[in-house]
Amino acid sequence: MATEPKLIQRFACFQQLTEAQVKAIAEISNSVCYMKDHTLFEEGDAAQWLYLLIDGDVGVSYSHPETGETQVDAVSSDEVLGCSGLIPPHHYTATEKCLSNVEVLEINMKDLRDLIEADPQLGLKLQEHIIKTLNNRILTLRHRAFS
Image (tube, rainbow, N blue to C red; front, top):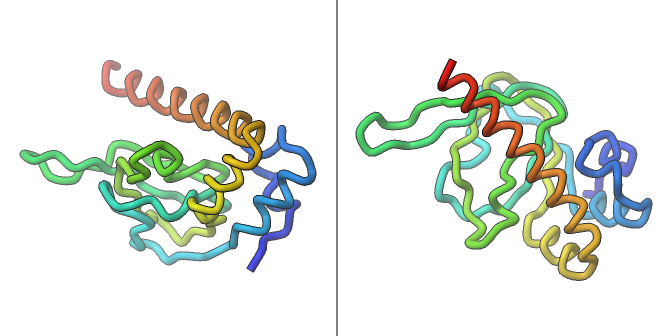
């Protein structure tokens, strides 16, 4: 079931897209609700979905052979989750679990990659935003680690 384009445009990563590009993304996305403690995806899994967090909080965890899984961050509404699925080998690099009831916009990753292949400008705009987002997360985590 497609999503209303107005919901897509709410997210910063899609605000630079044309109306046609937004409609194309709306066609491959769905709004879905998950309960607290639901795991959206696990580190190492094949990336099937790009998630946009509409409402709620999600914990970001990494596995370590000696210490096990450790939550390193929490993200809230209007964030992009599962970005590593856009980059080969298309696997998630973290585990992300709902810290509260959440609503997400799920975008089929294979369909999104097909759209990007057909419309490289869409891919460029989306990837520029995602790179900025991930860079800001890294800087925030680095600041926390060394404060």
